[in-house]
Amino acid sequence: MASPDLSIIIVSWNTRALLHSCLASIYATAGALSVQVIVVDSASTDDTVSMLMADYPQVITLAQQENVGFTRGNNIGLAQATGRYLFLLNPDTLVMQGCLQGLVEYLEAHPDTGIVGPHTLNPDLTHQSTRRRFPTLMTGLFESTWLQGIAPKTLLDHFYVRDALDSDTVAVDWVQGSALMARREVYERIGGLDEGFVMYSEELDWCRRAKDAGFGIVYVGDAQIVHYGGQSSGQSGARSQIHFQQSKIRYFRKHHGWAAAALIRLSLLKGYAWQTVLEGVKYLLNHKRELRAERLRTYVQVMRALLRGG
Image (cartoon, rainbow, N blue to C red; front, side):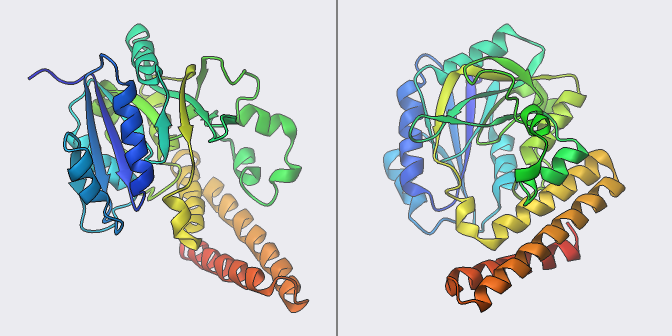
């Protein structure tokens, strides 16, 4: 049997309704492409697997007995995929007409490109930023921290590729894993995602390894998806922040060395410590005490995790 044009790997955890809509959008827009859809379900408790069996029997459902996490879940799906192209897709997305064809056609026309990402839209159809250049140490100290508001504008403009239009097709360094298509040769040459990244930065690392292996990374501005964002990770609370910060440290340790990682860790600890002091003062002043108490618990958990390592 001939290999399908495209294997789509979706890792799902308690996103039944959104996953149903995502799958409907895939089959409504696939057109002439032969598509293999693989859903790796991380022990959902919302009847996701039953829905898949009843409504999408053509989907390869890999039901796990535990929550395997985003990175490991994608690797489980990649190991089963047989398509010429491999599409990592979040369950909280909708594929727009022409997106799959546009991404596949770009890869077919540009053999030096290994990974492409689509133009991602918010639910209100405004632009959602998902294209990036590799972070420098300075970027790491400012971006997604309490210091971001005072970061040099040129630093973040470069990182977020703000020098190109949202609709442009442009070479970048990495695209976010909510929707990322790779040619099979990338997977065969560099392997799957690094499972040391439980969640977050795994696609950054994968694109970094692909670039180091000689593959180009391109954002395709006229291929579109809608992304609702954070529907699985948002269920994790403090755990999500811990994964985000530990993954950031791991990336800098892996690609910039131990000293850079130590500096990032120290900066993060100082930021969380300062935020803890501020929230503590607000709590003592009886300002939204439930909110302050929740934030204090979260910040303390994150600092403990950062002190243990990551």
